[in-house]
Image (cartoon, rainbow, N blue to C red; front, side, top):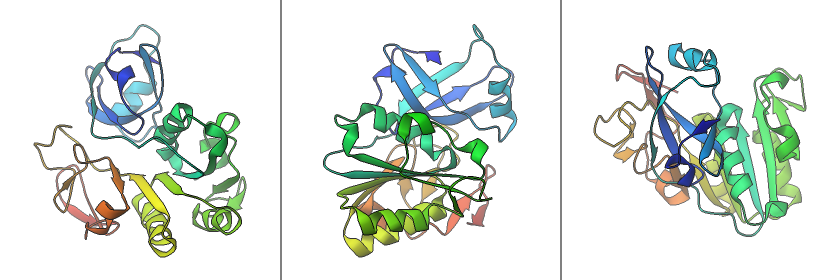
Amino acid sequence: MVKDPGASAGKPGQFMMVWVPGSGEIPLAVSARSNETIQLTVKRRGDTSESLHELGPGDEIGLRGPFGNGFSLPSGSCLLVAGGYGIAPLRHLYRSAPDAAKLYVVAGAATEEELLFLDELNPIQVATEDGSSGHRGDVIEPTQEVLERRSVDRIYTAGPEKMIQEIYKMCEKTGIDMEASLERVMKCGVGICGSCLIDGFRVCQDGPVADLQQLSRLEEFGQWERTFSGKRESL
């Protein structure tokens, strides 16, 4: 939990640039807010995130943001589909919704230990890649099962881009509205460096949330990503 009055006024789906003195700066989605504080959910996946895990109460970090756009507030019956740490911005959305009783959650992760906020979000379907909890595999099949049983007005999703691409195909086929939080390498957060571009879409400013129509115009969506050095690699 971090005290930051400016960040606490942000919308679900926006992100912060988080700087750890002596390490580096990374983008992180806000997973909850309360008064003048925000919560950040951080996976150990590099030097800077590792440094964040080593901090304790009273340690200082640098924050810039919130940046980008956010999710629209849910209305009607909505499904939240999370892959891995994509659960973080969706948790913030869930907590901010005017009527959480109309929100259904499908949560997936690599292992049972990486499934987060289960007691709080009470997912109707769970998936793990190793089969340690719920469906063995990703969230695609459980999501399809939910859509066969329930009427859904909109899907909100965050997680690996290949997963989001499959959710996009479902929505395109069924006509269900959709908003997705995209993830790319972000260095500046303000649309200058170009490291987060998907075609001409600046994830840090035009996103990170994109709707069905925006995704339909991105030829690189689900196909390519760029490394920190700028090299393009196949997803």
